[in-house]
Image (cartoon, rainbow, N blue to C red; front, side, top):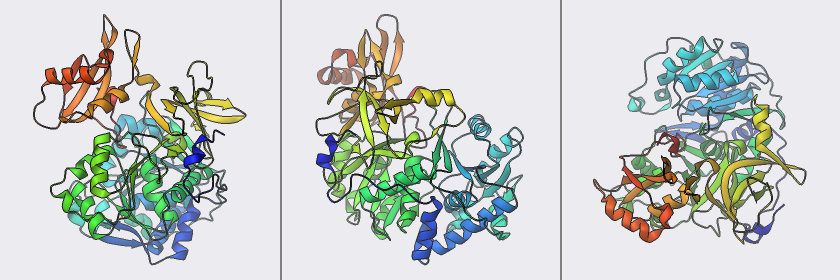
Length: 535
């Protein structure tokens, strides 16, 4: 293992953690046994205890087993926004010895149909507002069991969800499923058994299912907890989507492992986040760049008491340096960035809390061996040499669901160990910190010169009149490709002529955008990543 980064390793933490001896469900059962009356979920004024959460998990697991015939290894999809029902469904599927298939609530029929047909779930648990989408694919997907849930049923103020329909056309209502009080089956899952099929974002084609075991999911949950130092009974703000690995692991599974309270938001609301941080004394919050921009832009944000926060951070996209500086000034904390993928169930790298670097992926965490290789020859590269990031660790997936050829193409063997070829270009510095350059497939070739969009975007984010920027390549008859900058300006107008002169003064000539495209916003995925292919 490359151990250069041990020089900046968090003090008091071991370099390795023992493998999990239990299923993921065991974490909830333990929390409910230790602190049954502690609040597990705060949801718009409603407080759900760990005991109440565990009771609902068992009831839904019983319904899945006895009424829908779910058996060991069967798949069950969760297709909903952040809500207590998502948490209940997640752990109930595990309690039924089945396999979770999280689906983005932003998926519509064609996207949903692909995931459901590919994973073959026996049931779909969905938000009531998505009932028409679920019903539209029901026939083509073998008529799986359907359970629909209204988020407002769990909020103290049920009027907060105006878009929810009264009832779904087919399937069973959530309350009816729980009301049957069917006993949960005996739980028999071991660490090596299947736990989840997490679908990738599909940036290079149709989404692929990443098959994970209870061991690979737990490796991240336990690693996160140790690294961040979350104590039992902590207060954690959950603003990231739970269907995505970062929100799922950090904002749901980590709090449950530690018996902490999840302050759950269905939709992002910067004003509510500020109010919760101040009133509820939130201690931990992972977010994304757009959320932090919204938060820092709130009128009177400097008057909000954020002193309870002990750690903030995120991943998925680099935090612009200027935003990080403003945040540190307001909150008094460094924004701790991390790096991971669907194939690794969230982070393989996190910045050491005591010595973070900005716009940095961090260092490999417990038991992770990460290297930089030449993407063509696969030869290992040295410090500060850019190449493909390949990673090995206990959180690594088993492979792509029903895609053996793509699995084989993604796996590299080094020193007898399985490494994932991430498709990300990066480098490691002399201290063992890893930095992201760009995706292999995003590189823009201008007359033979390589332009990495993330590098140009980082420079553009330093311009005082630019709120957000995304770099893409356009076909060009003379240079092969030309750089185009898609810009969201801070104000109503931006002089692109002056901007081009600024770019010429701040970057090499071949990196200067040939065209500037001004937009009101950038298209983003549910995880907050810019959908650059749409641009």
